[in-house]
Length: 59
Image 1 (tube, rainbow, N blue to C red):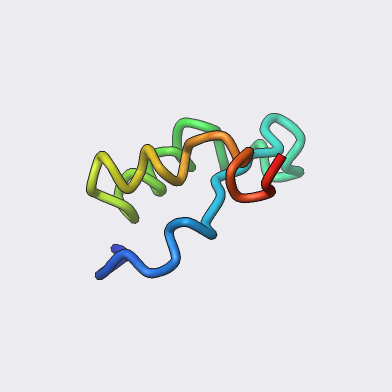
Image 2 (spheres, one colour):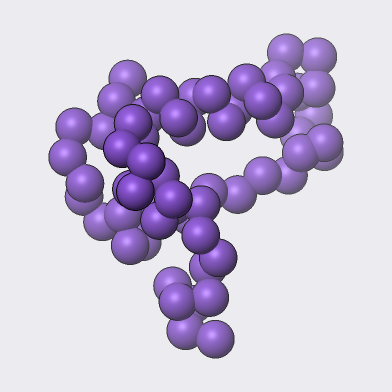
């Protein structure tokens, strides 16, 4: 799976409840970050998603 075009990246936010996911036996933070990296392959777009939510929530 890969994001084919940057749609609404300014509204996409990466968040993690790690280590309190209730799926610790099958998931890890690293595994989920690898998924995100595969989903959004452009470094600039990924940095935008990983950035602080300050601008998104306007505070």
